[in-house]
Image 1 (cartoon, one colour):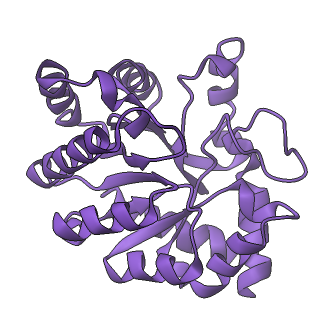
Image 2 (image 1 turned 90 degrees about the vertical axis):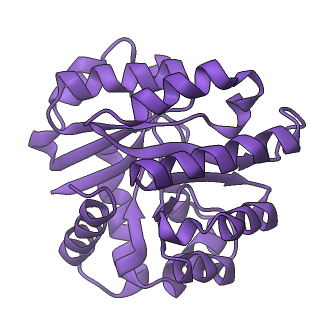
Image 3 (image 1 turned 180 degrees about the horizontal axis):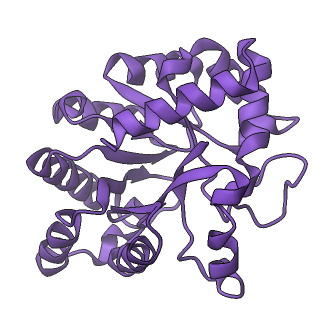
Amino acid sequence: MIFETHAHYDDEAFDEDRDILLSSMRENGIEYIVNVGANLESTAAGLELAAKYPFVYAAAGVHPSETGTLDETGFARLKKLCALEKVVAVGEIGLDYYWDEPAHDVQKIWFARQLDLARELKKPVIIHSRDAAKDTFDIMTENKAGEIGGVVHCYSYSAEMALDFVKMGFYIGIGGVVTFKNGKKMKEVVEALPIERILLETDCPYLAPEPNRGKRNSSLNLPYIAQKIAEIKGLSYEEVIEITTKNAERMYQL
């Protein structure tokens, strides 16, 4: 059974068939799903899904692109959400420099605050980092993120940096990009990483793997990702599923 470590089933892309799709997961080999929050509203929506489906868990956090509207009142609400039983991680949090807003300094402040929150609640973090490799690594180092643990999700940097995150104690989230014909860098990352530090994820509805690239993504596409990892690592498909599921259970403390 496969562990989907990062999904966004609260997204409007699933409004027409969300319940039908989620109800089909177990019969298609998906054992657990973590629905990840991007802001307070999506976190609350993810918690509703976790309450409805026993195999769905939630992560509570404010994505760096959403930190411009975060304030102390919102942070107090986030802290309450993070403390709930079916919340297994604080995330997704981090830095995103692809756009100019919110200001980088604002993103850094709330990244550090949410790292502190995870430490206080003894829950792992889900890190989002885009075009911000050095600052992400530096903030994680300064805030002793290795003591907290978690995953750098939808990983997009070099194999060398991936190994640096692993040395810090983090897992690396591998999704559909590894199947792309132009996904050479991600294949190098998977080749370099120990399988014991890899997590399977889709980031659905985004980044569907080949052969469904460009379509709406879902956890039903995870076998394509696992098969590609198996090819790269010289392992069987079954070994990849077994090991990555154990990795996810360990990280999320399930």
